[in-house]
Length: 289
Image (cartoon, rainbow, N blue to C red; front, top):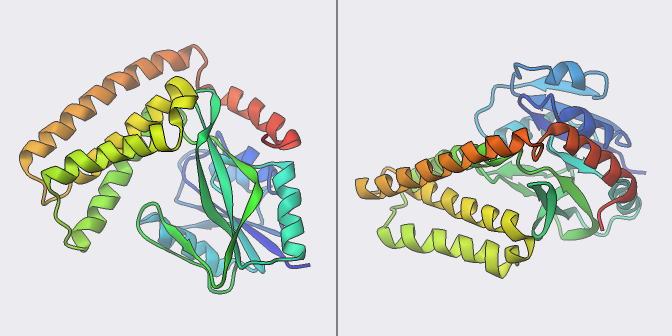
């Protein structure tokens, strides 16, 4: 039977890391690669992980490639701290490893946002690969590569994507700067046409094409913030005219107001970690339907 290593990158994930580690205890090796967390992430992870590595964060690909260098398993499963492997997914992974037909497998992620799973706005992501030849490229939205064909697993991975609007928009801001850095390195110019068309298409893709409208207000919120993320990425580009940056800043002010509303909602229990943890335990035993 081939061996499996699970790699989990972390930074200040004390609220989520224990449940993530508990869900992958079936693995032969569990590696946590931590970016010098200032909370109790490492303390919580130590009894449940095989190895804890420390590395100052520079970009997502470098962080995961570093962990890959220390992995010993024949296969690698990449899991984030806010993700959970269900029992049904665990069983499917074991079956695939016993008789693999491909060198890598994509897993579907129905994102959990505003107290529900957004099945219409889910993503298929390559996460399970043979270790030999596996590597990441890209600064943000990093891409995992493997040698050989890629299949897809039927079971889903639980993903508590965002802890609320503040966290969601904060991620978009961080990603925008990484992506702008990539555009600058490739000498890509930004135009007013791109500033109008790309965010509009991102909204259309998320809300209409992927069926986000079926998810109600959470689906609309995800589509709007995804579109905003594209605006920010283009607007912070050095080649973007100053007027576009003003438009982007106006968007930022609007979403900051939305965040203020989010913090009020969270006080009413919409985004409490205890509710996430309870949902985790239910989904692990039954799997996602």
